[in-house]
Image (cartoon, rainbow, N blue to C red; front, top):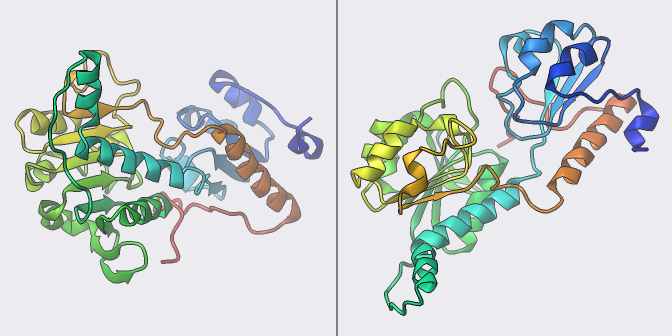
Length: 305
């Protein structure tokens, strides 16, 4: 028996049974963080006080009913930070060192010498300055890259980014980036942030990396930018529609790396997510402040910096 089961009556349910399970419940742990079942079952939440989601992103559960309620929302911020940062460094190195072509040549037993790029002193613009963005910035700086950020407000002297640009001025700073990394939370302000205008502002040698949310990108505009050579490549871990449809042109583009929403998933991550909830549950039982409380108007946990 799990320690939580010794301290509370626990109901386990799939999406179809959520409405019945919610009646009389004080706490809801949304372990399936991609599920969109909560809004449809919300009217049954007659005594809910706290909702925890097993992810950093909260957009699947952030709807008007929850925003307007007194229910506290927490997330699993911090679990995936370093793993996603490693992924971003990995795909940047994959582009720079032309690993995909090396593997293709190896399959043909073809010895083809060529030169590759350095990443030292290349500029990475990280769009999203929360904990995951900060972990990415630290990782890329350690690899010798120059890093700046884009967030809600502009500032200098940031300990991880150095310079942070205001997201509203993003188009002005895209032309200077060799790599643009999207990791911003999904909000009304960031939905469709990377559209035809944004890709046109990037230089033709730039690569785009999305480890945030698929809806940050207008997919058709990205496909067109890649086809037209407006940007050099993209590494995509998240998509507007998941799984990525089999007829998507992104599958077959030789300048695109596709992964199935797994950039943060390390061996043992499921257990870690449960332990994050358990720690907060112990705090809730003891009447202590919860960790990772989301500002329901902003859509994320406000940073102290």
